[in-house]
Length: 421
Ligand SMILES: *Cc1c(COP(=O)(O)O)cnc(C)c1O
Image (cartoon, rainbow, N blue to C red; front, side, top):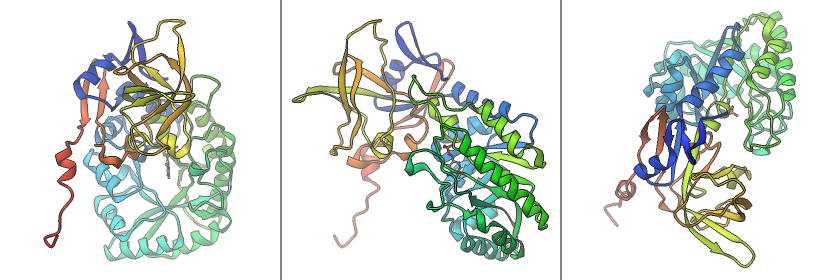
């Protein structure tokens, strides 16, 4: 559920008419709901209540500092995957001991940055990384707390580009080699092994792959403890899917996910960490765009918007579906047309939807892409020298621009001409 509803015939973000934001900031733009972010975070808190747990928001899904601060103020930690994300989390006021560092390619610089700034743990993904981290920590006179990410070889049954838990994926170490790798980690001077990490993919709409993976993690916990490792923390990753359409989609609820966590790993006495991204941020955001032209093709109508693939990449990248709704509520039973919904970028892949049935729209009308909070603004680029679009945060009847639209001058000034040119 979210807080983007029609009221008096107009789409609202909480108590603010979306058209009012469009008039103030121009289109296209992203708008996020504080109430939805809060509600989704709270659902995980409730689902894990009674367990010693920490929720580290996967900030790669939506990393504006205003969003990070909203969640951090509720007690969230952050899952970061780069030095840039680490710096952003710290800038948003997240204490180092609530930041976990994931990713297959951490550099020595990133390790140094996190060790000096404070870190809850590194989720280590390979033996070379383990050795580098130990060396970096030793040079700094510190000990790096680590989990090792295991790859459980489980089919997450999601889009191939976001499945991460099969043996052919680049992530983690094969679970079959875990005991050997843990023994090596324990022997390295700069590391303190605190637990196990697993993350099998994103947009999972079935709970069973999680159950299979977490059962393997529980077995591994017992095996590693028997060999003397003090496994006291389990990072179970993120990945819980969200409904992208209003019909026929019922991904598992956080409550059921929490129950499954209790069943699989709840009796081990471990501290539980989870790293949800999409479920917290996805339905907390809209992309709002304006129709520039309605163009008649030979056999179809094109709805040409001012938003494009560089603003919201998911349809081009993953063939993702986003519901598109008019900002003015259509009258009940109003006529619809089938549109190919496209942006102005010079690529045929700049297509948001084909043959989408929408109420009839004309130039100047506003539309909103639903479920655009996660992997939306963060994946945007300036392709075609289109400025990164503004982000707006709503709370009740207030809204604020949390990232302004850059001017052309600001964008162009980043290029430097060499003296010899
Ligand atoms: C992307 C990612 C997540 C978050 O995934 P969601 O599907 O957005 O919940 C969590 N952990 C790791 C390691 C990730 O790479």
